[in-house]
Amino acid sequence: MTMTSQQLWDRFKKYYVEFPAIGLSIDVSRMNFPDDYFATMHAPMQKAFASMAALEKGAIANPDENRMVGHYWLRNPALAPTADLRREIETTLAAIKTFTQKIHDGALLGAAGKFRNLLVIGIGGSALGPEFVANALSQPGLDKLEPFFFDNTDPDGVEKVLARIGKNLGQTLCVVISKSGGTQETRNGMLIAKAAYEAAGFDFGQHAVAITGVDSNLDKVAVAEGWLSRFPMWDWIGGRTSETSAVGLLPAALQGFDIDEMLRGAKECDQITRVNDIVANPAALLALMWYYIGNGKGAKDMVILPYKDRLKLFSRYLQQLVMESLGKELDLDGKTVHQGIAVYGNKGSTDQHAYIQQLRDGVNNFFATFISVMHDQHGKPLMVADGVTSGDFLQVFWLGTRQALHEKGRESISLTINAVSPFTIGLLIALFERAVGFYGSLVNVNAYHQPGVEAGKKAANVIIALQLKVVDYLKSHPDSQLGQIASAIGQDNIEHLFRICEHLAANQRITKTAGTTPFSATYRVI
Image (cartoon, rainbow, N blue to C red):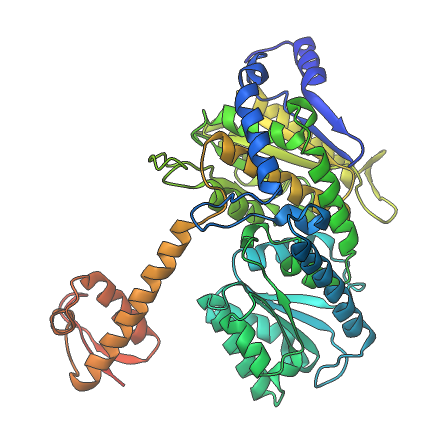
């Protein structure tokens, strides 16, 4: 779409919308949708609005698992469909505040004294949200607890975190997060952490907190071992929409953030995004832009470009929220659709020196979402040029990149917030949660289940069982080759056997004698 400067200005005035009550503006003028687009999408969006209203009232919005979807109730318990649910939400929030105060006041102590560190163990939504918030709102030297994360089952990564904590385990509070209590990566991290505490002579339970489903395996462990506290993770909350539950609020509160402001930001954004008027609803605008640019099929990737270091983890958080919610093979009618939107990004202006070159001149298979922040810094700004601060440069680099992309026909959305604060972090989380929900309705998919993730977990369990069979066989049949092992244990996936044996040999758990090819080696148990 080629336009004169005047035409661009006219389009900007038409499609730039401010939401002063929450300090947000959204500009979709650099998306090339036709002027009648909102009119043509009126009926589908009214259906999406109705579906969202039903969801908030307690309808079964996740039919595959026969579950309600209630993350909106977390920041406004009055919306919960039953009095019992409302009480559970309010009681949990009060318990988070009471527990946090005891930690900060020193009423609850670690083996070596007052808690100074926070170790969060989780994966996916149990880590991405808390990590994003921890990085976005941290005030080094002022945080009540310094956060660390086990967010994978990589032993080297875990060892690196433990090395950073060093001799301060006795002053480190450990929060273990798993709804089912059986998530293997989280369980592995918990066992490694427990071993580290015990090796240092500390009782792990004296330093541990669980966030999990009632009566889950993790819940039972926490009770049996006398952990400091337990907080609920309800089945009507998905991991990727759990940041305003105990999953996100407890770590944030422990780090010293104002969780009431986070909840207020999410609540006020929820109120604005309930409006059944496309132009007056920022989440609806986002969902419609995604639908337009991808032809309703996710044909283009979403590149998240926040021009603020504090928001650099937002793209990782959105990867799960968007891709796990929308990446579906089947729609709600059982038709094969292969829906989804790929998400990637880092931060500006770093990305201008990384992949902006391709975005401008390479394959036009994306749309950009710029996020700018009006407030630059807390301290007095330094002039790095005559009358210009480094924050001014950040602003003009964003505007320059946006213009450079537009000149080559690359489309973009621009979001602006006043500052990075607990309120605006809650706002951003709620905004994208709602946009994902609307888009899910537009493309008729279940945005609240994750069958692909479950399939990967099941496949991993099968391979672990296979590894145990391999080792058991080698104990009584040393110096066996892959073909012999496969035949003996009835396994036709020899590639998996090869990978298993090579990994065990590399970690000195079995020995390998090389053959004439990589596949003719022999193995034996050490």
